[in-house]
Length: 330
Image (cartoon, rainbow, N blue to C red; front, side, top):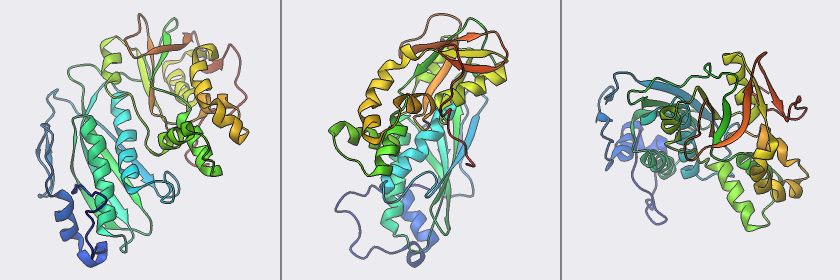
């Protein structure tokens, strides 16, 4: 599913709903004028797309966003939602050491949704995908009682071996690319309806449209990363996946994360929260966390170390009693 650019004055005066326009007319509008990335040799218009895999292997991941669970229409613009859907899926490919090349998107929405709104979602999808040199290769459009966006992303390893969660070894440095705690801070500000300082607006936007450190997954793989994951559920929770898969302990040093704490401290004071809860347990920043046996590549910073097992994640040498991260079925 792809779409035209919708500006402030480009919506039709008599903008149809999805039901009134009909599925195929809407799809025709959404795919018009788009240029596919080099990896996509056949885009929308047939029963399936054709995507090349220069490496001979394809990295594949899929994720779903559901209205009122992963986004709210009173907080996010349709464009924001499209960008977020691409960003969180691209981060999974980055975390394997790959490069996202193409996305397939299924969009479900009530039949009275306007065509221009659907086009604005598509604009967001395309705008984020273009940052990666990727494109939207195809998808589906269906009627649903609320908005649901399901994305499948395809990626290229570029001749590298995938960086799994299971390779961390005692003595490795634990490092992060990207920023932590911003999305959780933005969510708290949005939930409380707090605007205030100019910096708060940036934090709110970081919840609505995360900023993965694009390109750093491949850089980590080239630098010999032994394990890697994206920080979608929270730093401690996602490092816990590495610890379990690798059979090691991980000790996070808060002194190395103080810049993240400072970045969200004023917002935490405004809502009466502990900023460390956001830095260590806040999800949806889609930073990358990895372990390295040697020097860190540019763009990465040390946040802890890998210990001999048993599998556990410590903070400053001890158990963390606070929030450790997101649970999908809470």
